[in-house]
Image (tube, rainbow, N blue to C red; front, side):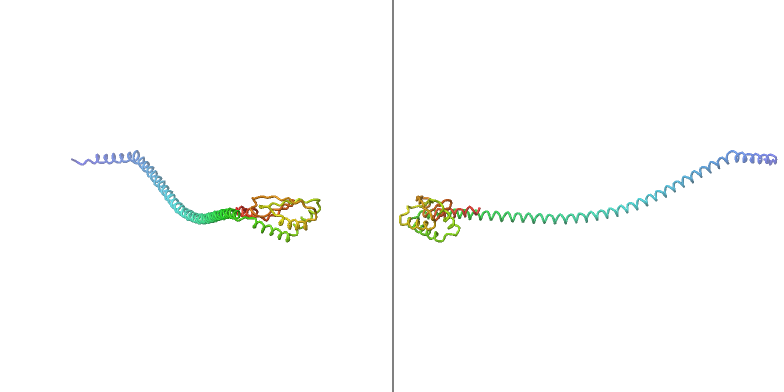
Length: 249
């Protein structure tokens, strides 16, 4: 193959024309596309970096908030535990006070029950004593015992209180003073006489003596002068004994 200079020059010219066409029609648009692509990638990288920074900032903010929340949670737990401990102590104090009050109430109730039982026992003992004394006195009652009680009545008339003596003296303003004398056994004239003389000295008016007999007196005398009653008999003493039992209620 022979070297042809004209052909070689033409080939060079064709190559240059091809390079010019390529540069004109393909290379510059390709460079523009590559530049835009590079700009897009750079922008995407910049956006991604910015997003990463924002994410890191959010993560840091989240961690800080989480730490702060943990601190707040710990502080809240500590405060809650302290409050629960204070409330528990207060509840324990209140519970102890309630238990102490309940113990005191039970103690008072028990004491009252014991006192009531003791009072009932004392009352029953007094009632039994009164019944026994009544039976004993009824069996031992006699005219002699009544005579001794009668003389005791005469002695009492000698030592009457000033108020009683004044009441008897005021009866002296009446024309006639009725005096009811009740005894368990008939009063003999020897017993009636000193009584009438004693009352006559105390009352300066005619006296209408009325004598009655009542076996319920057991032994002794009951004397009714108007609203004033003087008892020297065993029935009255037993009634007083029974009243002591009733007063114990």
